Image (cartoon, rainbow, N blue to C red; front, side, top):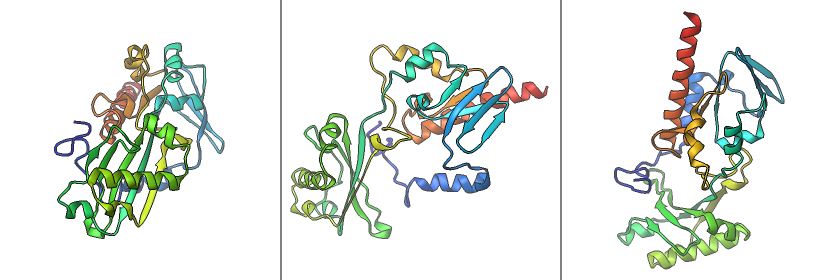
Length: 260
C-alpha cells in the first residue's frame, strides 16, 4: 500500500502544499515559542534534568523529546554519551538517496490522452512518477523521484541535463511529444540538505535491524520521536505524528508521577 493511490499512502495531495500543516501548527502553538535558526549543538542529561544548548541559547527542562532521524543525532554531542547500542546504530544507518523533481506543463496532456500520469520505471532516470496536477489553480505537473543508484549517476550531471533526460523519459513512457515541452522544472536533492541528509527515512543495513526496537527506549529523561520510530506508516507524516504522540504520552505519564 505504500505506493498505492486508491486507499493507499499516495492517495491524497494537499492543495497548497504540506508546509501548510507546519504553518498552521506554528499559529496554534504560538510562533513566539518556536526557536528557528537555532540548531542544537549539545544535550546534557542526568537523572533529574536535561540541558539543551544551541549556538544562541541554553535551555534546561525536566524532560526533552528529540524528534529527528536517528542518523542526524550524530550531529549533536551528548553528555554523557548515549548507550553503546544506540551509538552504534545511529552511526551505521544512512539516510535514503532521493531527489524529488517537478515537471510543469501548460496543459495536462497526459489526461487529454486518457492517461493517469502515474508510472513506474526500472530504467530511469526517474523510478516513480505521479500526477501532481492542481486543477483549481491551473498547475499541471508530473512529480518524479530519482532514487538510489539513479541519483548517484544523475546527481553528478547538471540540472539542465536531468531536466532534459526526464522530459525524454516521460515522452517515451507516455508516448507523447508534449512531454518534451515543459514550461518549468524544479528539483530538491534531499541528500544535499544539511538537516536531513536524505529521505525518506534512514535505511537499515544487514545486522542493524535487531537494535531498532531499542531506539524508542528513553535515555534518562530524553525521549525519542520521529517517523523512523513509528509503529505504523514509518517514513510518512502519519508515522511522525504517531511517534510524537507516543513520546508525549511517555513524558506526560512521568510528569503526573512527579506531581503525585
